[in-house]
Amino acid sequence: MSTAPLAGKTALVTGGSGGIGTACARALAADGSRVVIMGRREEALRASRSQIADAVPDAEIAICPGDAGSEEDVGRALEQAHALAGRLDILVPTVGGSGFAPFLSASVADLRRDLDLNITTAFIAMRLGAPLMKAGGSIICISSTAATLPFPALATYCASKAGLEGLIRTVADELGALGIRVNAVRPGLTRSEATADMFADPAVIGRFLEQTPLKRVGEPEDIAAAVAYLAGPGSSWVTGQSFAVDGGQELRRNPDLLGAG
Image (cartoon, rainbow, N blue to C red):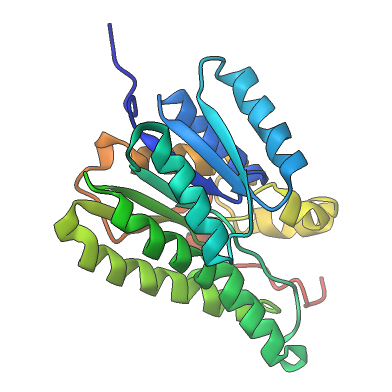
């Protein structure tokens, strides 16, 4: 009888009611982990828990309403996850975001918003979560192809995701001696609530597909599969990495959605 690769493990997923967060929690649960999902909207968290329970009937899924930008809220979620079985093994901070604005229209407030959304939320989760990983563990952040590819009208987002990957490399170096691995998944354009407006415009999707060798957009399950790999034993010698899951888009570029044609 085979054992699930994450049997006996406990995970916390922040942003757990979003499309990518829910998919990540579902994938971890399917591999045998207990999972706590955290998000600001309790109703949305309950809906996500129901989706996961339908897909993985024997899953142990708990919810913790809270703000990933609040040390108090994140600390409470981490304590809840740790209390499930006296351990924390997997941490997946998925919160992030931005808004489109040409650089000459962007403000300092835009930059600070993106730094908080994409770096501070991950920093808080890692800084408070790592001390609970007494037996080692795996931290998987969600980056973006924007960390390495310029994207017109997303300068503040590109800067924040590049900064996140710099943080990941340093944290991975420092925490390696504790048996804690720190990596990131770097999605290309992926279907989610945050990208709903882009998916509603066939012309925008077409311009992305022109720059995507595999000729399809991403689904949350694509990202979740990579997260599950980085959480599991198959990646036990992998740390400090940011893996592109993007249909090959990094071989080309991001489309210029400001340009004509």
